[in-house]
Image (cartoon, rainbow, N blue to C red; front, side):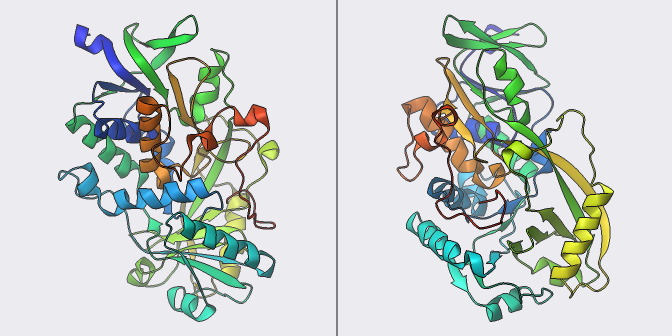
Length: 407
């Protein structure tokens, strides 16, 4: 390694979507002496397993603000990421969420709070949803929220775009560069050691290692309370014209706890929203887990999709896959300075990471450069690591009865 490669202002450990977004955001703040160290290739971890839903429907106002500010980047990637970016896979199909009678009040309060931080969202009626989703049985729903700017995207392509933009600004993205240790002097991080034995000295190290974060930082006495949760996705051939499928918006069904969205090829992606509480998660090994849906999950898919979407009379299972979430006790991320000086953590995204990634990158950059958030709607204190020890979990004030941990 050359002398120039042995030092940096910032080293980012992890070349997934959050690490690459942080590199891009740092470059926009004028910090370009940055190394992204990725053990495999950009986006090769759980980034590529994202279901790609884009929504701003969060009861936690700071998350709603992160999601809505991120939309600008997803909608106009060439403006923010460079003229060389042609397609990051974002499809602005819209996003609809439906609730039962018990959750109407929570829905309306949540929508109002979202609007206060800039989210373009509204309540719509059964007739409008029936036009958007003519294949669905809407009788169990009492109210719906609608985001015309929502939709779905491709986390892998988006991570690649962040990486390309960062590189164009002078950031060094090193693939096949596994970080095996932090360099620590007294109570300060001074850099990283790579698997080949080389070292990179840095003023700041950002750990954006997702599901691998907890064991990595435990070596330094830092407990990031992350449990790895295996999540299954099933792809469905709905048996209808693919053009009709591509016109469908994302549908979050908080009655039967499922979400569905179209794929560009005409399939339907199904995910289960009925998540266990943090203490009930069956921990998974992110390096050794079943990369397909189980028979029980396929049966669940058939039951939920069959009941909700009778307009798919010839639906069939096409394929399945699985990924892992890095879940915290409040199902919200840690974007925070750590107990060791010079160390910043961006992990624990609990399934929210893709849609808020541009804002995550900006918050990391703000913390590195200024020590605080530059957006008053997104206080860095919301995402501090210490909140778990303090017993101040980041929770929505408008919880949905029986609707799991998704909001």
